[in-house]
Length: 162
Image (cartoon, rainbow, N blue to C red; front, side, top):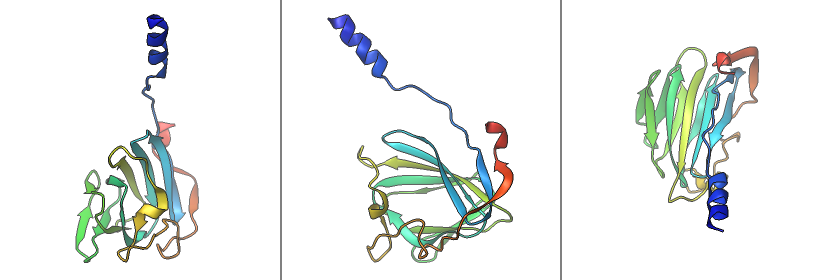
């Protein structure tokens, strides 16, 4: 009986997997593409043709980081203090820290967004993404200055990644 239990445990173990950062370049707006996730971590590529996440907000259910792969971004806190993040630099945004970001480079801004759950709890979603007044701020809302996304036909970041 022990051998059967051991075999079942072996089959239930998580397995490593490969993922791709291939993401369409944008003519207008932004795209956020989930590329990998576990219960406690999620990785997205984000591409902004202009703008960014333009309304100040915080996340109550995750720490996260942006790593600039192409372009330049400015990250502002609720007081307007600015961090300029260049290509191959990143910014750490702890749970509860208010921020907004903008594409301040030439061309598309390409970032890797890595989020990690707090206290081994899954993401709560839009209700944990708050404005400074405590009200929810949906990521794709007009208040967040979201434009209809328009992809550049046939143009991709990391196209060779498959």
